Amino acid sequence: MDNILEVKNLSKSFQGFQLKNLNFTLERGFIMGFIGPNGAGKSTTIKLIMNLLKRDTGEIKVFGKDNLKCEKEIKNKIGFVYDENHYYEELTVAEMKSVVAPLYKHWDETTYKKYIKEFALPEKKKIKDLSKGMKMKFSLCLALCHGADLLILDEPTSGLDPVVRSELLEILSYIMQDEAKGVFFSTHITSDLDKIADYITLINNGELIFSLQKDEVLENYSIIKGGHQFIDSNIRAEFVGLKENSFGFEGLTGNKNKILNQLGNKIIVEKPTLEDIILYHTKNRIGGSQYV
Image (cartoon, rainbow, N blue to C red):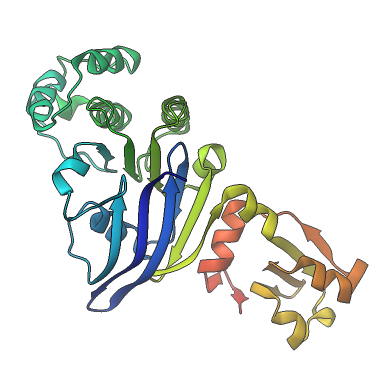
């Protein structure tokens, strides 16, 4: 097993927030969706991986090497795409490339020209005049032109229209035909992960909820619906989250068979979406319904 990213017992404390003992790994050739509600610790984790924050405890290895001891070597092989534009707005695409390219040891001008053409990026246009979708494509172009084996994407599709989002996801899928690469994809848009993610890592309140293959996540859980009369303390204990209203209950469980053995045809069993699973794990209230 060749892990491109390993996070072990990672912790970081701030006033009012703590990232607590995160553990997950990403193998080469796979895309990991990194997800959680706002304030869960996603950005903190990414900053720790990139050594933009100093960790309190734990270990981070990228390409099998410590991200502190081998920082320069590692960053030369990481492509990073932010959700916001951090370029000089008054420069053209070509001028901005000329600023960025010398920073990398293995910049490939041929690859740059290839993606400029494929993404239809206007080199003579100023950054400030590009649409958000074009800016994101430019960021991705720069991330791919220096031999990066790990792409770290921080909300890359946020705020984009569905057509541009779909196009970017297709680009990522194409890139991943190279099985030597890996993608760490932080997002809150679960439909994007439905399309391309191989693994899902969910965090909430600074804690790891799970890090599993996407198919395993979807197979492990079920939505159960039924009437109030069938809920007791033993049944409640089998739910990750339970929503109750005047019509009955609906809940997420990882123990479908146990509930079926007790309630049989008195309940309805449905397959959850990835969004269902994440909401039940992270939300206390939605609308006027109570999750317990």
